[in-house]
Amino acid sequence: MKSITIAVIAFALVIAFNTMIFTLDEADQAIIVQFGEPIGDLIDEPGLKVKLPWQQVRFFDKRLLVWDGGVTQIPTLGREFILVDTTARWRISQPLQFLQSVRDEQGARSRLDDIIDSVVRDMVSSTELEEIIRSQDWDVDIEDLEDPAMADRDDVDLRQRPKLGRELLEQEILARARRLMPELGIELADVRVKRVNYIDSVRRQVENRMIAERQSIAERFRAEGQGRAQEILGEMERELRTIRSEAARTAEEIRGTADAEATRIYGQAFGSDPEFYAFFRTLETYRGLGANSTLMLRSDSDFFRYLENVQVR
Image 1: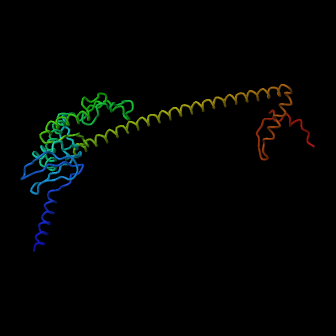
Image 2 (image 1 turned 180 degrees about the vertical axis):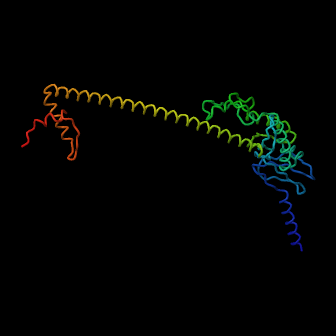
């Protein structure tokens, strides 16, 4: 019976010991809570720690934590409705204040939803879309644009730098949100705008406008191409007419030179022996007559002049 009592006492001591000892990890910090109220100082040194069996330990992460807000539809200062997706990094800087204000990470994320979303909505609704999209140090080289006419758009001035820009906008959101963090025991490290997009109806309008602009650019290129093609064809036709004219003039000059040379040769031949030349030309004419050719000639024709003197043998 005595041995059973000792075993029970030993078992109770083991259970009590297990409930009194806890381990604190390097990434955690802890506060001991007794009957719902925190007692003692913050425990932030890692290792084995001791508490009373009826006390509880609340652990809090030392590391940076990530908050992701929901995608929110917000109108800009120019009344363009956009979808804004933000994220933030935060840590628990004052665990006791954190425990008393939001109790745990789930409660902290709920408060961050309210605070950061509210600040983002206020900032975006009082800022032009161009200031949200562009960076302050973003210079646009008009000469490098595919379409230089984009520089003359009415809705965006690409030549003017943004007064605020995405980076300064995020810094202002962070500064405003940080003012409400100390009472929660939270340190807000940074806030970033992950994504900005138009709502579906506006996005379709923007896409249609982009398509219309691309089609306009394509039509202009086609018109310029057709104009250049007509110019090239005109130049080719003009050069072709010039070549043909030069060739015709050269051919006429060659023919004229040949005719002159032939006339000169004929003149020399006729001048050397006119009678023989006349006889030769008459023979050439005789040779051109066919076997069944019939000529109607006068008796005093030159064709008979040589035939009359022919003696038939």
